[in-house]
Length: 493
Image (cartoon, rainbow, N blue to C red; front, side, top):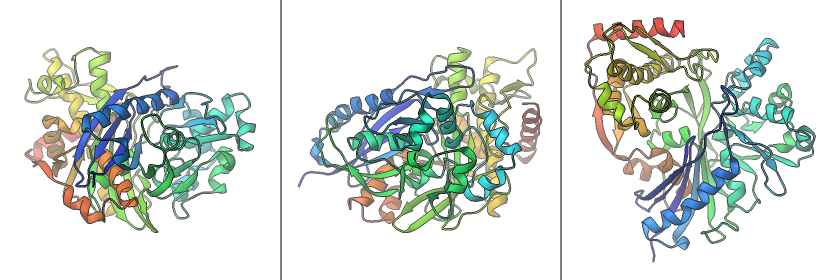
């Protein structure tokens, strides 16, 4: 009998990647392609939905060729995606009405401020687990309905489909037959009640969102539809797993027990801690979200998001032209033993959890005559890690327990200097897995469970292996000094 594989689609903020996972949960092939970042105005970020789909199609033959397999050997497809990015398209022919509005986009800050002034934030805190911030999908959808001719009326008539990127990909993979999302992505819209796991009228009404344009909410591991008319794939392959990228990473890191936590260092940095089967309202500026739902069992998580992580390195490369490639930052930062008083707050798109200050901006402080580019590079890396420190301290306060280790993944987790400083400033070990493609692995596992390729969660647990453990090595006095400098810089940002 020929080997079977899961095709994992990892659709991120700057690139689309396709990966093939075999029955032993080994990654056998991976291919990726970047796509355009569109900036119509300062603070606005968009993606072309059709371009995202075309990158997905283009990668299918490439990843199959790399693995040397036939399309019929694909037993199922799992999808993981940038979560809050918001699209709107015509239900009949699938034509997008506008570019997707990316999660980083700040264009709805005034809408969020107005809703707060009207007293709505406690409602969204209590029922959706979220704060009123431009980060989330609901206000982005409202902007599209307000600014596209005829969109509001067409949405009310059910002629339009709202969706995050998972919905868009399933819609296209299924030949426009399925308009669905999963609970993890729905929990990031402002529109889903965490208890009922449904889009609730009480959450739709303040934003003026018509229910007729919303997708059906499903679990994270089931067959939603099958492929139809997809170039390079036969019809009938089950589309069987969906999870937002950060929840997929928590799953792929095998954080199955309450209290286990991970941080993914991508464009932004995202920390999630498993809460078990009951949601917990944060008292310290964090978000409550659905981690996954399998069968009739829902697992919840607390989340803290730093909007800028790897993007700070990209800014150093593309904006300041201080380095030619992202990996060069480690060597440049290592050219100095310490960045001294130099401190960088990476608030290039505002500050996320636990501060929630959309008006904040990036700031570089503490420069002196002897400061070098090495000091700046090191401060950029430390700034990323210091954001994670603030998030994890808030998590410990909410969960009322001390973290014993942090599992790390994402592209920037390969930076040993960053990981060591993260462990130092947290005073907690950081553990990097043997394969950092945990986001794609999580999506593949969810799909594999749905089609019977993987028997249970224990198989995922057995497949997880550590590559390196970074133990804290910083003295308490040095840690306190770093944190004091950081706190003053955050106040000024």
